[in-house]
Length: 492
Ligand code: HEM
Image (cartoon, rainbow, N blue to C red; front, side, top):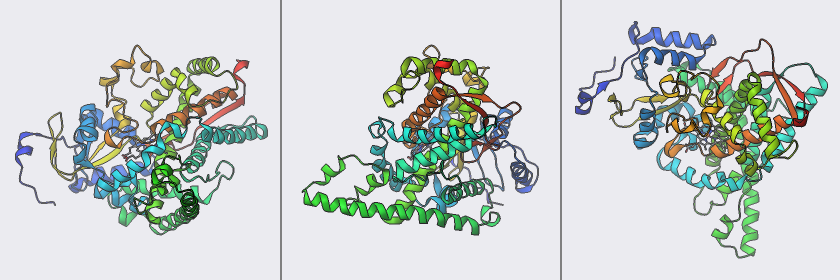
């Protein structure tokens, strides 16, 4: 047993966070119950929601005598993500779990290491980098080609659209970040995507199982990481060669460093390399940087598109309004760019409503540095893991009303959007570490949806029901089966 700390003055003045009850020493009943149920396919997000419905919006899920705080109130979420953000870091536990996979990349770093990467990367995510949406459209072309081929060869069979979206966003993200697409839409069983998926799912297990070091097999994990490394190092070495040639050229032309930076860069990697003079990056740093951005950007957008399909196949009325809007703004065939997408206001409402009910990152963890008191008076001890769940906060009836579980894009319409207060809706996180790719994600999702609705009719598969899987990203365990037929917008 951990020795009991003497109470500090702050602790004495605050309220202890309610403990979720358990009955065996070391809370073994709760810990084992959770692991067994998860292995058996439990919906973890609904499990957490049921616990908070029963015990309150600020709880301590203590396991093996370690505290684990969960907060859902917008004011507490705001406190840890923004107001007192410096006191809530990713922390050593998080970093250890992710280390082999992500090194000290942006997603897995705190302090100066995080800050430098964020500052350097930010310009690459400005809208100007994807205003014409050409890169996105190129990969949507490929997606459409694969869907058409599938319709031609098996017109009556259902299709797992989640699988296609994962391959599509992997191709788009590797193109945007590395300048070298995996082309997994063309070659489904790419060694890289298998290795990436495996590394991600083992990492999610390391989170769930407190004794992961002893329980989760490591040999295959390290073998798959090696496959990722080989792939990424090849890209880095090519980019370094290109950079050297560019440097020689610019010396010939007597360009200054500032002129070089202002030139615009095709990929995130080139963008980082253009700062090589000021900041010495080694290959390992660049490798981690790329894998971190890939993790952050790829499955999240695929998840958003997947759950959008699930809601749309059940709501022909919503689809009809979306199609009407596309016809008005773009017509049946025009390929959308960023500026067109901005005019698709109802479509954005639909996307926001999906992000509310099915946030791609449903759960997120920080660790306190010093002791603290939350705005609702609860005491947070030092060095304590503290989590928030966008999934649960987005489903609180006291915030959203009694129709909270209804899919209603009109919540986001001009008359009602005013009642959505900050930190009630946090699919992209918030505060200084808010998602860097938010704008790119909306653009990718909306360009893709527009083109799918211009070209197809998408229908439910009778009897199919997705099973939520709350890994690092919210997916459906059994895919997302839909029926899809070619149909132009003017045939409606
Ligand atoms: C629907 C799509 C997306 C969602 C819901 C989403 C959500 C999030 C969330 C919740 C975080 C905070 C993670 C944490 O701190 O633990 C985050 C961070 C981040 N996201 Fe996204 N994201 C999406 C798409 C993208 C895309 C497309 C990219 C880029 C290719 C991207 C790049 C990043 C980066 C670099 C961070 C780390 C920011 C930092 O720590 O300073 N995201 N995202």
